[in-house]
Length: 252
Ligand code: PEP
Image 1 (cartoon, rainbow, N blue to C red):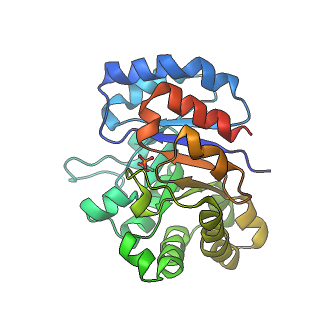
Image 2: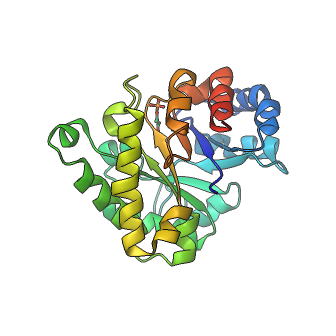
C-alpha cells in the first residue's frame, strides 16, 4: 500500500516571513490528515525557516533543485549534502528547469545519484510538452525521461524515489490532464519501464504523483485513479485553504 504524498512547489515565491505565515496557516490541518504525507518545497532561502516550524512532525520539507557535485567552484549552486542538512526531499528535473535552465536527462541522472547518495528523497519530474503530446510522442518522451532518472540506481534506491508525472502543457495553465489518461500514461510509460529495469514489485512500490493545474475541485478525480499516489502542486499550494483541501482529497 503506497502512502499518498502531496508536495507544494512554491517556486520563486515567499520570503522567509511569508513562508512562515503559510506554514502557520496550514500546519495544524495537515497534521490532522495522517493518511497523507505533506511536503512543503519553498525556495532555498526559506528552507530553514520552514524546517524549523515543522521539525519533529511528519510534514516534510523539500528543495526545488540541487547540483550534482559535492562541492567546488560552482557559483550559485547548492549540493545534496547542504540540502540534507535542512530538508529530506528535493525536486529534480522540473519542466521549468528543463525549459529555462538547460536541465537535460543527463543532468537529471546525475542529480538523482547525488541526491540519493546524500540520503535525500528525489521527487523527479517527467512529462511531455504540448508539441510532443500532439505529435503522439508522449510515451516515448516520458519513458526516456524515466529511464534516465532511474539509470544506475539500486533496487533499494529506486523504491524510495517519488516520480511526478507533469505534462508540461498542464502546468500553471488551468488545463489539467484528463485523470484516466494521466493514469494510463503513469501505468504504461512510468511504472512499466521501472518494472523492466527492476521488477514489477519494485515498480509497484514507487509513488507517482500527478502534477499540472491540480486544484481542490479536480484533485479527487486524480486521487481516485489506481496508479496516482498524490500530487505535485504549484499555484494552489500557495493558498492555505486550497493546499489543505487537496491534501484532504488525497486521504480519500
Ligand atoms: C508545478 O509547479 O509543478 C505545478 C504542477 O504547477 P501548477 O499546479 O500551478 O500547475
